[in-house]
Amino acid sequence: MNDQIESTRWERLSFALLHVWVLGVCFVVIGAFLVQFVGRELPCPLCLLQRMAMLLAAMGPMFIIHRAMSVDSRPAADFSTGFGMSILASVLGLAISGRQTLLHILPGDPGYGGAVFGLHLYTWAFIVFIVVILVSGLTLWAGSMMVVGTRRGRPAAWSRITGWVLGVVIAGNVASALFESG
Image (cartoon, rainbow, N blue to C red; front, side, top):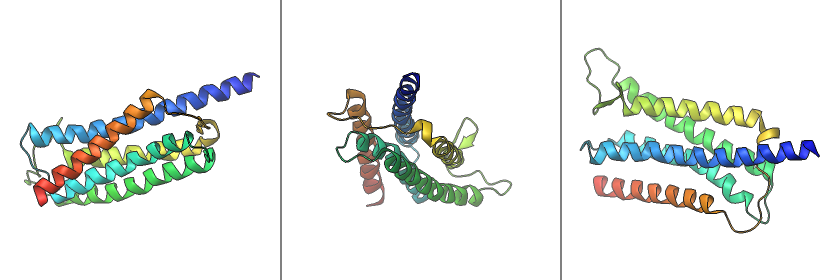
């Protein structure tokens, strides 16, 4: 009985952390939007690609959230698939942000755009992608405890809100890229 209660606690914690993950990545991209619109700094093509990779990395946990409420949910397989998606998207983003960081690594190069807390946004993106890869790997490693399980029925309000926030940020990113690049 205690094992089942402990398992349920881990499932709830894991489910909540998936929401925090998705919203955290959304807030990073929203921060980039603030720099773009308030700071009036247009993102370069590599910055746009990094934003897309971040949003793809957030779609992995959102996939797990969505599948947990599905009738044909397979918790362990969905868990692995979602975090695999995040790792692949983060490796892509890491390569893009690493390339941009290396473009501006020469002494005397001012970099592209202003700095936030002493680092340029592409350097912050590099750090975010490393963190996403590490957290995804640790979560997969602890997978037997962290698998979400199934949650039949209509999604809870916070799952719907998380999905809407991700959708709005994706739509904003698409609109911003279209208006900037044509």
